[in-house]
Length: 286
Image (tube, rainbow, N blue to C red):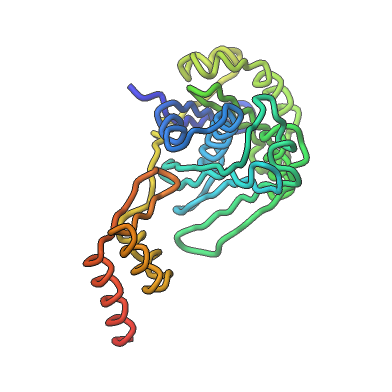
């Protein structure tokens, strides 16, 4: 039975909401596509947990992208998700990376970009500098800037499993930060081995056994890539036909791979002729 689930909960006697996510299969799927150094395995786990928790805060159908960019040896780490808790991700790096490397060592002058793309409505993008020592602290800064609501984030990963917890004050006319501070102190006692090994209900009981907690039905979290041969074909059309023909003459086919899931799509000379001819016909019709 998969542990990859997102749990939402409310405190009956406090205007605070919480979320808990635990990941294994979906996390391993992302790690399996590339031979990531240990430090990136852990970072991608934390980033995946964070993206799932942020996705659960969406009030619309659509997509979310949480990415870290910088000028260091790691140029990009990104998790894309949607309101169905379907996630995919990738990181790009150069050279050897120390297991204990900090965010600033990995990314240099970096920043986090969070992009929300609703199916209906305008796209929103928020940016926060990568100035705090942990990913969780940097994303907390984002919430203070964008929503101005007290928010706490706890992220964990060990290369096999990943997990995270999210606490936030519910917007109201009278914000009781004392309740949030109390619940945050309880949540801060959580240990990595607990969230990565215990059942979700055991985690919540261990933290909040003296509180009244309303737990909602869990959402499944899955790895899902949106690539397809059709989408790859459209990308192929952005290259000149002469260049494509040159590759086919040398290799007998054109092969294009998806970085997210490592699926490879192959196009031979017949495929390419049909593809470019179809594009010309469409242009003529338009």
